[in-house]
Image (tube, rainbow over all chains, first blue to last red; front, top):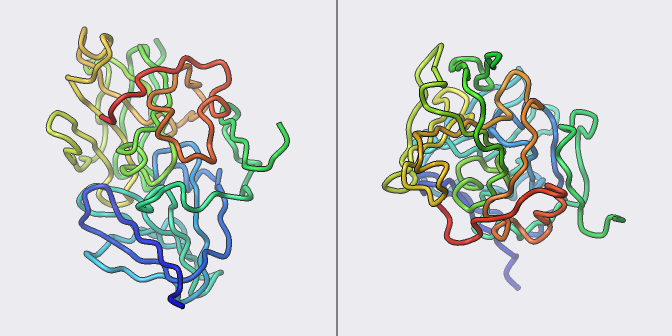
Length: 129
Length: 143
């Protein structure tokens, strides 16, 4: 049986990627660096294991938001696409709103909740009201 | 009004807002999601005369014929949105520029009071959860 596959890319289509296999985890991140990288108050991630991610079209620009971290975005339209950290070797964390089906990977947890903007209200699937 | 400064993640692009926001909203449209990489963007819209770039030059991308989005070419932060044809009389009455409010040095300064295109959120994120009590409108075509 073929492994499940997800595809996505930036707004203008210059940069595309492919995810192979089941997405092991998905989370929201509230940290300032993720907020600033995107310009959005909360960010969703598909958190992949090594070997699951491949760029399939174009080349992103990478920005080191801290010495161990590189963030990929499209140089033509600015879409933030990926997060990688030396602390998580081989892992690629994909901004899930850039999937062709942005609803495909519902987050089940939240990172850096202590940095959450007070007026951001999210309720994850299965959470109590 | 007090000036509000802001800028991108790496600091290459800085701006100043000197006008009172006329709109403070979430936009959940597919294009805002695509431009940011996140499920929803919080915007404040101010008179263009009340917005100044104070350092650097952002890159402009036209996501539709009348829509200009800017971002930092060095670190990718989405910064502004302009669309003189946006179907909201506040945008058509005057020349407004929308600024991604999370990029303000005080990102909490302007809590969104409205939600645009809430029906385009991924199904795991309800617009009513996102902005309890907010006004919901413009759920037609993405801009």
